[in-house]
Length: 106
Image (cartoon, rainbow, N blue to C red):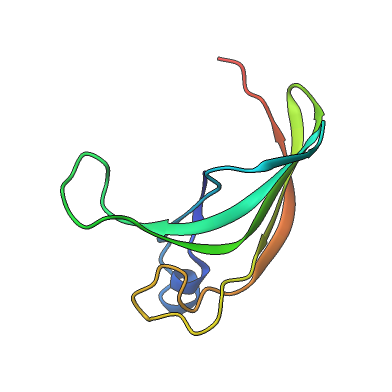
């Protein structure tokens, strides 16, 4: 799960609206690489009744592990064309990049 800020809202209103991406599965393409489809999602919180969440495939996530506690997260978001305005990925711009991530001890 990746929680970030919606660039559509930042561009239009300057407000930071949350945007959720999930990768509910994935495939190990090598002993140190996990890759899978990323979905942009929306819906009501799990503890509230309401409509079912909506998930739209919108790109890929890849995790390249350099150790048990460190990896590089790479994202490539390219939403499909011709989505309905009610779709959570509607008008989402392409996003790509990578971030180093590290396991945090509690």
